[in-house]
Image (cartoon, rainbow, N blue to C red; front, side, top):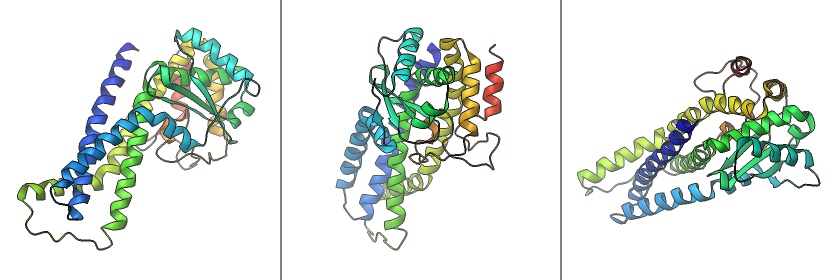
Length: 296
């Protein structure tokens, strides 16, 4: 576990560094296409650094806003509060994550934040209505494991940064592919090379972002499942919860492609995909249940 925590911290730093480089190249190309000249590199670096800072320190707030989540209350969610308090003790954490609720009939949950001190566990009302005590305990244990393992930092930063890259890519396709052409003939060879690199990254950025999300997701789900069992001592609760969540036919209205990998199970209901593939954000139900049964 400690090796995974250290690995997550290192990978977060690497992803932020790559993000600064990619965004700088993309913005440089866009600025040069608008004939902004030497000031382009200043704008590119400034925006990329600021966006990285915002992604790191405000990623949890951005994700909660994207999910339309509201704070949970003791009065309405006493069972949920009691489960979390007990599991925090089992996990040996010094802080209790904040609880949020999303009004949606699909049972699902995710954790977010940059570290345990700034962490959030968010569940849908469908999860609270459709799962019993031990199933809910397994799900909360799973999300608490993401927090203890620092998966949330890596996942949340990737979510916000990928969303930002997609916005830039969409801006490019809408603005430049429809006819905008840069006619500057006196650019230096170095500028031309940087602009070419920027264009390549602009085209490939969504693909890189998707692959980054997939790399973040699958392995951490297995580890979080195993850690949840360590907290609850009850693999059957989590197995039953995963079966109910996966079998539920309802779509999660607030989910989108940039946040899908954060949930305990995919929020999308594509019946054509029964087994996990390279494009799956989560391991298949069979793979997860098999791994959990082997823990017994």
